[in-house]
Length: 382
Image 1 (cartoon, helix red, strand yellow):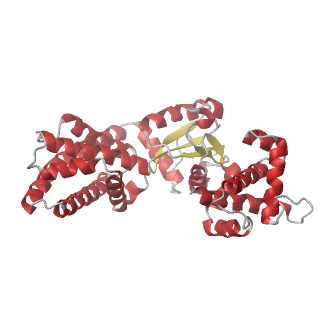
Image 2 (image 1 turned 60 degrees about the vertical axis):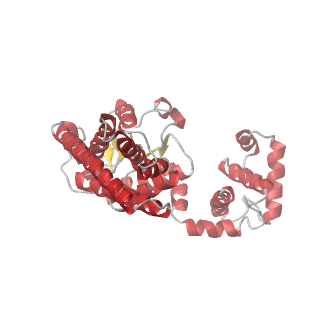
Image 3 (image 1 turned 120 degrees about the horizontal axis):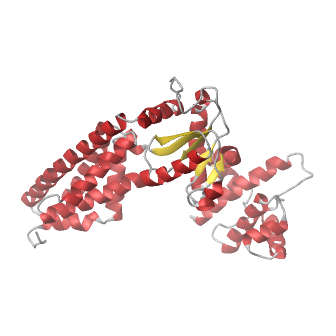
């Protein structure tokens, strides 16, 4: 069916189906009504929401949902089952997103003078289409659940989920109750990418991998060489905790999730050790304290001055490289004398030395400067 002058509701939906603001509001509505959906990465919800909104628009234009639209709904139901989201939870999110979208279209239609009868007809047609989509989603979810229930793998993944959530559960193969395993966490939710990473994590030795809280997690006896993993140093961020017995991995899983969020906010990639992210994780967990340091130590710098931003970036790199000029210069691709000049100007403007080996609190001073400069630069860049 072509979009005619009389079908003003359809034109409204088509105009809004690619509106980023409407998409984000619909995503927020879906996540606000389901804790389990909200626990998934936001891009996962956004990807499915975009496909379904466009699918509904295509179905309205064509007089009903085509097989491609139904297939997209089926993939949503199947993905949620494999991510451990119960059917009721993901339907709560779906219905909340649908309700928000319909309310938006009605409000926009009334502002544009679309007659109530036309709006009612449009909402009725959307309900018919979404009912068909829900049937396909529920069917695909149940099929996926049945398939997983028949496999040994799902039992093992369920054990992994219980261990990481701190539940008391018998430790069965492939894990050894007396063994020690690195808890690895990630933000990877795409099943295909997760499958590739799982193969790489398992190649080094005994491993148990699966989607926990919608993201790939694992317990591995040995960590693989980061250089040989998907994407290498530029691949997906994974955080690996020190080895611990299966019964003691739950606190490390929670801590790893915190470190993952801090590392992602800092733009880190690749496989990282949890202990190497200790300061970053602690700093990210106390934003107000970091803001106080950023207001005090670099107080002489102007966030609106590009040269001052350059000075702060140099100071941070200088601290990251242990106060050594040449490594800092190499990292910034400048001459060593440029680094010396910038550090001198930074210290003149702030009235404080970056490093003071003679101080009785040299380590604390360096850590405070590092924290302050990171927060100051984040504010300046925003």
